[in-house]
Length: 422
Ligand SMILES: Cc1cc2nc3c(=O)[nH]c(=O)nc-3n(C[C@H](O)[C@H](O)[C@H](O)COP(=O)(O)OP(=O)(O)OC[C@H]3O[C@@H](n4cnc5c(N)ncnc54)[C@H](O)[C@@H]3O)c2cc1C
Image (cartoon, rainbow, N blue to C red):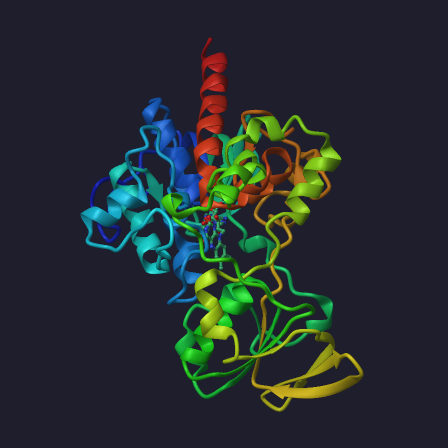
């Protein structure tokens, strides 16, 4: 047995996760975020043995700013389980949290607690160790080297590691790590009280951080190449004007028939020509602030909306940025630079995956080619989450995508299991 945590108790309780005596597990899921947890609930439903590695909801707890609200509406923030019982609505009702399908922003804290509740209710077998390396095993399958020194074998491995490996910082922001932070490294806004902070970027993370850091007492400036935009407050279903209703239903990703297709038609999306799929994923759902941010940012925070950062250098204990705006270029001194410059999904950035495995994965651009059951061209390696985008569409980078992905991947894994045991 390996020392992991599982079952209906609290996360603090030490329990054990089943690993066979030969240190071999059937299915290892790397990542206990919404995708890993959702897949686990589907596998458990089919009676398929597996272990989920990593601390549950780690990226939501540690890599997003305290005080943040989710951009997805309540009804679009469900981690999918096979029976559709473990919804955010039910969690909220049982735990006295405010909830609305639409128009009630979901606090980050509530979503993290929901994830933990889901883990307990679905009895997800979690081993909290991080996986340092996945490599081929001489006897077949894969070897997992864990951060706590253990090594395990796994017949099949599902990669559900989220976006962390893909954090993108443009080269012009080359600065020491004590001065430059990617937005995913800003967890506690109160640390910035009394400091000047330059946020580079104009999307949802940039605007959310601008509001939170300002409210925590920082002196914030946002540098964006274009004028940031904010989503429109959603109309509740009964309040939608006829013209809007005719334009399409409210779907998880947004309102309209195209959104409905991206939210519900992932299998159809996969049949579109590759170039079309890439174009949709690369261009849809661009940077935009949540509707509830407008009056916390507009007219309150200095947003430079036609600003290009041409360079950056260390200066004293902070940094000096070269800021180009129409008709002028100036140098700006700041204590901290936050790169809210997004993520670039790329199989090659999965540092824990042995190079020969990475190389063996066929690609569309930087994304893997996947079977209908989410298996890569390296037999036994599966990919869930944002990297599945070029195959199954934009929903793969949102929690709402768990409904399709977990069901299909569980079916694919079950089918393989059945073939192997014949
Ligand atoms: C600021 C921000 C706000 C967002 N808001 C929303 C929103 O409102 N709604 C929405 O639908 N989506 C939102 N997203 C996107 C969101 O990240 C995804 O929808 C969701 O997290 C995808 O789930 P996941 O399981 O793929 O990834 P994650 O939630 O990131 O989970 C992956 C897990 O894998 C673990 N892991 C990684 N590597 C290893 C390893 N080697 N060993 C063990 N464990 C490992 C990580 O610790 C992490 O816990 C937001 C993203 C960001 C950055």
